[in-house]
Length: 212
Image (cartoon, rainbow, N blue to C red; front, side, top):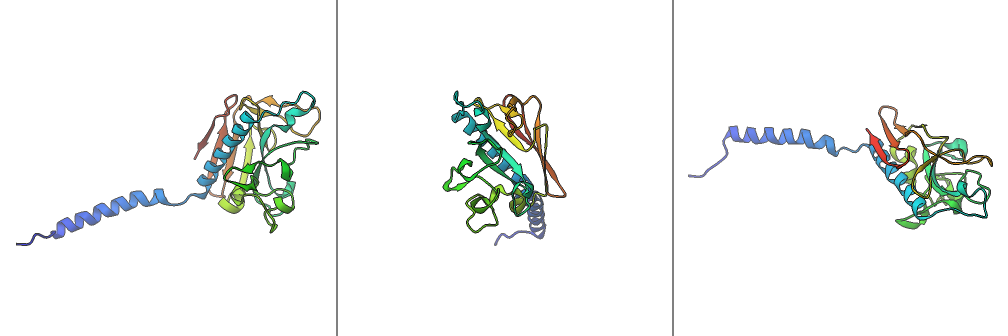
């Protein structure tokens, strides 16, 4: 006599599959805002790493501290032609104007032909230009739908680290400015118009965590 599933057993299996599908599928759906936050968290840590291995101290330059590794956030108000939120990783030099130029931007460690900018200024740093040499994924607006980016507890739109990896607070353009250690949490809040996520950089240690 052949053994076969009973109708009750088949119904039970279908119910179990339905429950598992309901549990698993939501966790596999793409969440661009969370992806943007995780990427930014990783790149903030990378800036801290660059600061640790590339000390900018120069006894002959009284403004040497302005050349430390930093991440700057902006929209087209500071040069973008696409009006999207993006960020650039660079080490300021020469006149220390606080704005990134092509030669100051970090190279993509996975592709040395790319620079770590999501769009900044014009030409090879303008994401709408055919000669753009940056990384589209650093443009949070175009790649992840980020419509709002706010910094709270950080001075301006720059986040800088010293040679010990400590986050600094201070302006970057005035000849009389100096970088003081961050004394309170720096919170970067991203939004896509419906949800928000906050990235927090802790003072002293520079520890970075995300609140979804």
